[in-house]
Image 1 (cartoon, rainbow, N blue to C red):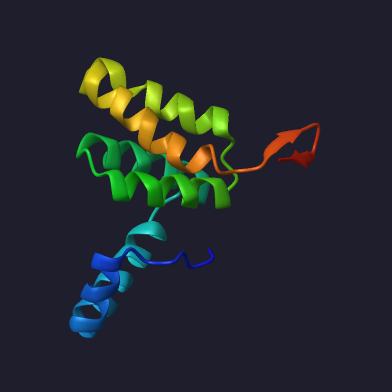
Image 2: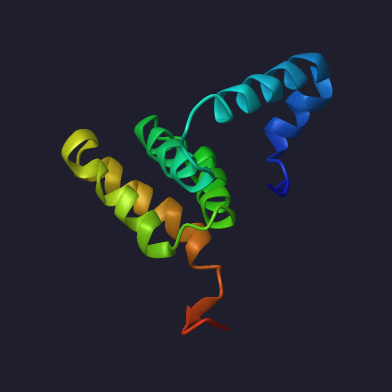
Length: 116
């Protein structure tokens, strides 16, 4: 999976605590590879968790990762919609705005061709 530009706070963390960051990365890799879920499913689940803790930055990150893993905008929006019964309407509406921050910058795809 390609590396994204890190947020400033996370970049500072990685520079200040490189050994802790390396351990965190190894833990994440171990969790990702310890079960049968594919990358797209894992990222949609992690997106739901990020929404649940109301972390705008994590939502942005997992939307990008879900797209890279092959999730469509419709699948991402459906994952957000599933939050209403559990998280409530205000949290879900906030999540739609955070997801839109990323999806609205993506080229539109129609019949396999990108459009601006």
